[in-house]
Length: 203
Image 1 (tube, rainbow, N blue to C red):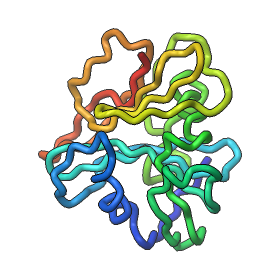
Image 2 (image 1 turned 180 degrees about the horizontal axis):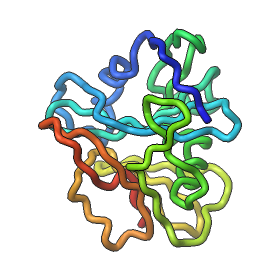
Image 3 (image 1 turned 90 degrees about the vertical axis):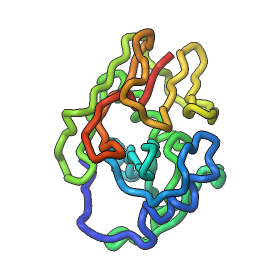
């Protein structure tokens, strides 16, 4: 299980995201101060890459930003770099938009297929029972997926499989009735209440 360290990151994640988010094609914010609104983690089986789904609120919307944390740059992923930060225990970390990271992709597919268990965002070795993954189709093949950003989310595409869309603006009423699979979870809404809805949809 991944260890969640009680330490600091400089600059912090929200500070890095404040500079990175507004340039995304799916960003729906108005420039308000960012706050953490929830999320969860996934384990890297090799124990090298940190994987986090972070819900980020700006006072009006809540965006979903999956991130990976690495101890060295990811080859060919400069376009997906959110920034670098000094971790109080692990040293310099490279933070990436996780959808472009093959380790994130593999673990997201494993979560959908029931082979991975969501972990609490802020505690070590604690499953997050609020996160539910469902998918009844053929297993996703190994190998990096093609990534396509759009105004509503980011699609991960593998040959012969439905697209896996990471929803970037979270809405509890998003329709998943005809979806082939989904990941659902909880986050804190703009008014401070806890809401539940889809985070990832397979279509």
